[in-house]
Length: 339
Image (cartoon, rainbow, N blue to C red; front, top):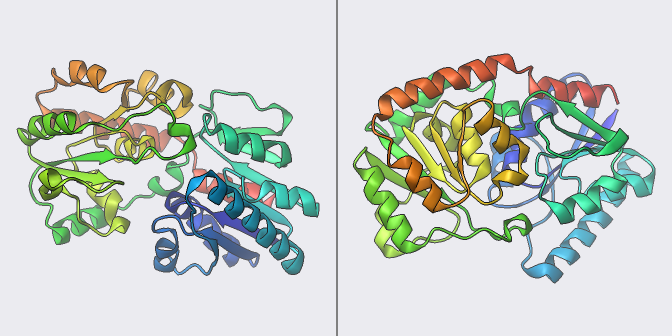
């Protein structure tokens, strides 16, 4: 079988890497195409996975449209030339239409209910739409649900001993917290606002009483906060998240990663009610603290005192959750093999 796997984001590398290796070991051909967003290609190089880079993100709505049309053309060309049997991706926006147009199957994995434009474009042309069981929307006969989360595809076998060694090498020997600030430039971030300077100043002041504070920001920090900039190889971020005593930020993905790694995570975003993963991890598993605004966060956070005990509790909860979920990576691989 010949499979085309599209990688459009660094997190997609983690999601598909084990699957790609397994498919190749079983004698199948895998063509990997990328959209070089942030460090996507760098991660694939590190994983020693061959790929074809089709584009880099463009700016503005018109630029994104031209980029998408170019990707559709190139992927259609590859499907026909390489005689691809199945196209697979997260979001499906780049693969579902070319697959439909050329008459082959496409599997679209997603966990983002509020990616409205992407979903409108991808879902009608997808052969199967695959989501976590937590997904808040029913998508009809093509909808397949699995037990777990996207992040489990790469965190279920996380090597904690190796992560500890990495942290020592990077110099993370004292208690510390991680603050994550996203740029909010995606379409689904239309109603979100960045933490303002007084708010960030207040957050650093509060967290500094409990240890060092490192900020991971998608936008440049002002000179006032540059001493707190997290300067590490981005490929080591999971090792650093696992060792933190606390995570606070507005990134749903990194908040989930932190919580699954046993780090108490506080997510602040108006998107939360639209995302089933966030709703269920907070309400049903007590693995994520979710707040719609920073005012709500401060009301709750004012009562947090003993972080060491909180970290131990979180680690126990995350381990229980990890062990209860079937292997997501195996599920993805088996689904492709059974196509």
